[in-house]
Amino acid sequence: MTIPTISIRNLHKSFADNEVLKGIDLEAHQGDVISILGASGSGKSTLLRCVNLLETPTSGHILINGELIKMKDDKKHGPMPVSIKQVERIRSRLAMVFQGFNLWSHLSVIENVIEAPIHVLGVPRKEAIVKAEALLERVGLFNRKDYYPGQLSGGQKQRVAIARALAVEPEVMLFDEPTSALDPELVGDVLSVMRDLAEEGRTMLVVTHEMAFARDVSSKVIFLHEGLVEEEGKPELIFENPTSERFKKFISTVY
Amino acid sequence: MFDLYGYQDIFLKGAWLTLQVALLSLILAVALGLLAALAKLSHSKILTSIATIYTTVIRGIPDLILMLIIFFGGQVLINNMSYGFNEWINEVLTGYYPNHEWTSYLPDYIDISPYLAGIITIGFIFGAYMAETFRGAILSVSKGQLEAATAYGMNKYKRFFRIMFPQMMRHALPGLGNNWLVLLKTTALVSIIGLQDMVKIAGDASGSTQKPFTFYLVVALVFLFYTSVSTAFLKWAEHKYSIRTR
Image (cartoon, rainbow over all chains, first blue to last red; front, side, top):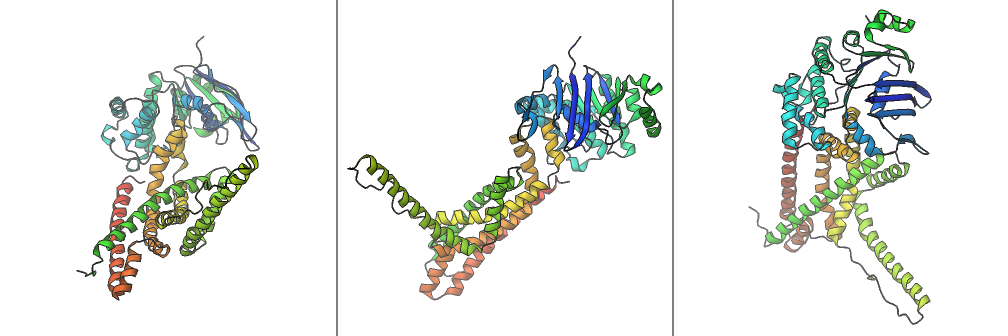
C-alpha cells in the first residue's frame, strides 16, 4: 500500500454553535481526482478549506503524505496548529484555485504566477519566469502575460489562477467551485484545462457543481449532505445506481 | 523679484527647515498611523483601546494646544522625571553608604530642542489622522487577496509586505496626500515654540523692516510652491497605481 497523499480522519468543524462537518473521512492517493458534490450548506467548501487549514478544524486528523498536521487545544483561542511553520510548509505544497479567482490585483499576470515560487519556495527568478511563461502558454494566455488581472475576463483569470497553482508544482490541487463565478460560455475553457490536468495524473480535489466533469473526469465522487458523506464511489457506479435517495434527487434536480 | 532686505540667506535656511520638519514628521506620522491602524484592527482588546484613545484624544484637541502641551508639558514632565530619578537613586545609595554624596546621575535640566519637539508633536498629531486613512485602506483590500497569499504558504510578514501593503497604499494615497498637505501647512505652528523656520524668520524680519506684507507673502508663495509640487507628485503616483486598479 502506498501512503495516501491526503488522509482525513473523523474531521469536525463548527462555526460557533453550528456544526458544519460532522465527522468526515477521506483518502486521496496520487493521481486521484475526487469531486466533492453537495447542495449549498452541505459543508463541501469548508471541507476543502480545512485541508490547507484556511479553516481550522474543530477536531480530527489531517495527514499530507503521511505527515500529521499537529493540532493543539489552546485555552484562549480554541483548536489551533502547534506549529504555524509546519502549516506554511504544507500549504506551499498544496495549491488552491478559488471561486473568486483571488489573483493578486497589484501584480501582472506573470508576476502572479512567479510570486509564490520565488517568495515562498525560493526558486531563482529567471527559472521561475521561464516556467511561468511555459505554463501561461499552456493555459493559452502567454500573450496576456503583462496584463493586470483587472484587464482580463473571468475565464482568463481562472486560467491564470490555474497556472499560478501549477507553478508551485503542487502535490495536490484544491479547486473550490472554480467555474461557479463564470459566465456559461467561459466555463468550457476552464474545464478543458482541468480535464487535461486530470489526464496527466495530477492529484485533485474538486468542489464543483459541474455534473459532467464529476461523472466523466473524476476517479471518485463524494456527495456531502449536512456535514456527512452521504454517498461515495466511482462515478460510473454511483451515477448509474445511487444508493441514497438524496443523491438520486440531487442529480435529478441538477441535471 | 522680491527684495528681502538682506534676509535672503536666512530665509532660505528657514524654508529648508520647514521642509525638513514636514518630511520627518511625515515619516513619523506614517509609521505611527500604520501601527495604530493595525492595532485598531487587531483582535487584542488592549491594543484596540490604546489606539482608539490615541486617535480620539489627538483628533479632538486643536493642533496648537497640543503643540504647546507637548512642548512645555513634555519639558516639565521630562525634567521632573529626571529630577525624581536623581532623588530616588541618591536616597537608595545613601541608605547603603551613609557617606554617599548627592550626585546628579541624570542631568537636572534637559532642554528639548524646538526642532525635535516640533517633529514629534506634528508626527504624533498626524499619526492619528493617518491611522484612520490606513484603517480604511486596509479594510478595502478584499479578504480573498490575503487568503490566496495564505493558501500559497506565505508567512504573516510576506502577506503584509508583499500583498497587503502595496494594495492598501493605492487606497490610502488620496487620504495620505490630503493629510500631507495639511501637515505641511501645520509646520507653520512650530514657529510659536521658537523654531527658526521661515514663518518665524518672516515674523522677525517684518518686525525689524516694517514690511510684513512682503515677508508673509513670500512665506505664502513658498508654501504654495511646496504644496503644488506635492499635488503634482500625488497625481502622478495615483495615476501610476490606478493603472493596475480593478
